[in-house]
Amino acid sequence: MYDGKVVLCGANAYEEKYYLNPDFEQLPQEVKDELKIMCVLYVHDVGGILTLVYEEDGELCFEVTSEEFDPMFDDIGSQLKIKELQREKQDLLQALQLYYRVFFLGEDVEEEPAEE
Image (cartoon, one colour):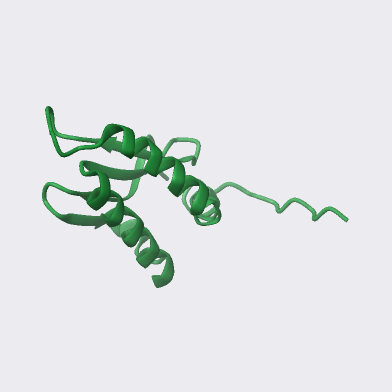
């Protein structure tokens, strides 16, 4: 259904805008709200442009860009903030990866049996 990278959402500190790919409009409102808050707070804190992108294999990645010679962009803070988000939002990010793999890539994903 999809080839290459697919953008899930993103926020831009320069234009003060948030974007959600219309293909993901059917996500629950709580998930969409959480993504928006996460992206907007990120660019508010460190600047630049944050985009959440699905790689070809379904992995959800954070992509960060900034305008050249932007004195307001915090490169170190950006890396720290992404690690913090990956840790704090681990369940959400894993669920979004699974959702994409099943509904967009058409993978047959079986749940692993719970350990006794």
